[in-house]
Image (tube, rainbow, N blue to C red):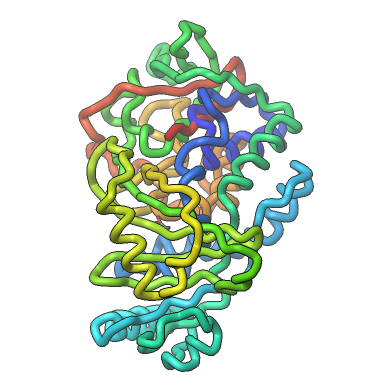
Length: 393
Ligand code: GLY
């Protein structure tokens, strides 16, 4: 596995469970975008026009979440912070309300569960909402998980399943007689693998040694996130995820049972920049404050930026590539946490059978033949007879 983020780890865990000798190459397994992500499982509230195919995969993964969380929690002996709390998407002005009405119509046409509420009904559910809220959508099926706990549990589950960790950067894919054969690590170690999985998140397009036709067209999309703490005297501050589009930007507040309140996220096409900016934090807090004025009372505990692995159609790239032996699990963009369960199952199927299961057929990397980025330079690998997975950032 080239990449030890949640996608690489779940692939490694599932592969090891199927009896494959599996190694993960990553200097800091469990790191990456999951350290920043809020952990919304928002198949319904993050539905967009033109993404109906992705919706099917998102819903399938949401359906698998309860059993996945129970199995992983038990395998790791850890609590994942999986919370079936639902989501409320609200509107603050007439434009937002019109936007939300359109989203509601799309949700209903797509056969999804979503209920329109008046502003008063929204405030009855969440009394901390601003008095000006004009209406909203109650989506009881969009839940949350704590991505940091998810990543930590996956590392433990991998260790317990016998996955080997190489805590180094993958430098270059090794290709022997036209077939991926593993990776050369930054410390000079050669790691051989029967199958190499590239799961390096936003860095997946930068591994050296990948032929152009197999290089994934993945780019970084920056997201800044703020963390606040809800003191016990204010609890329950919010009982579910609350979100809105304010002046065209998404803002969401994700309340954890342990009192953390995650406010996200910007969406910025700025290459590899992960600077936390005053402007980014200001906009998040300003928009969150319009939704829930009481946040100004809460301690600010953390600001952080991460990189989503964006793909040309916002959907992941799963399965075999034009290069024999090289398999992708990347490009999950805004849905990496949500898609973790189904990705693990799909990749285990790919690694044991060589083919994509029906649920993932539309997500073959081959749909982007000839569109890879020209800029390369990172890597990951595995060991002999191994599936490799790694994920950075
Ligand atoms: N899915 C939330 C985000 O990417 O900001």
